[in-house]
Image (cartoon, rainbow, N blue to C red; front, top):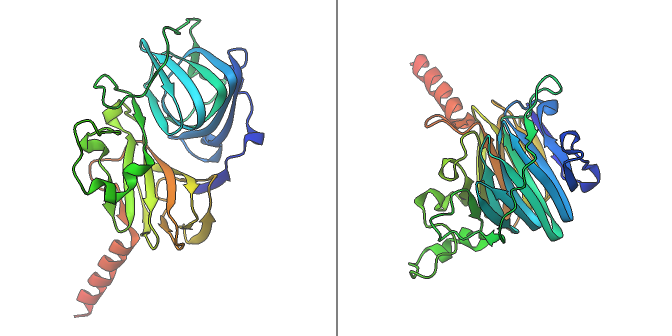
Length: 303
């Protein structure tokens, strides 16, 4: 099972549960139970200039990846100002409050698990608190107190920049091996959200495909979403070929085979999520490996 859609602000509305508890906040649901996803709720969110969301707590965890603008989040006694390419994780049962900057903000949000079946159950509770204290501090990845936020630096995906040592004063992204660039077959992967920043139920990461890069069809025992942000990507999804461009969104459910290829001469990039978090083993099942085994067994039986 899979689903394809596209980010479109014209389709964003004030979420019913946030009515009366927010100002200038709208959301476009991209992936949720309505398309068959029990583990993932992916949405595109906007907040107008100086807009706000009242103090609230959820029975799910979520991450915010800021695509444009600036928004400040207040939680756990911290005040964090998020700008473009900044990410933050809000754990389950954590009260938070949002305040937009002078230009507003636009972000991608992934929640896990998916929303409960309303009105039978609730997953969102407004607390009536005012969590706003002090001035917002930008995300400083060199500060060891930064526990729940991350900043993606596009230049960190350049292998040439990683081929030499850095000075003590140089780091602009986390030096943790957990966020080291994973590169193979023309593909680059950098983790943003996982257990390192206290997420337990989902992950989020950046994927780059260099020209000619390819991932052959495979599937997973978890759900994935792909939000395409740069270049033109060819996807083979359950045997059908699609071309994805920036703004397109793909959801692949458990067991949905998919593969991607960059057939252009330019870089391809997307934001990917996984829900639940992958198991320690057997998180990938490549079609070609099992087809090889089938052929091998049949060949052995002939002899």
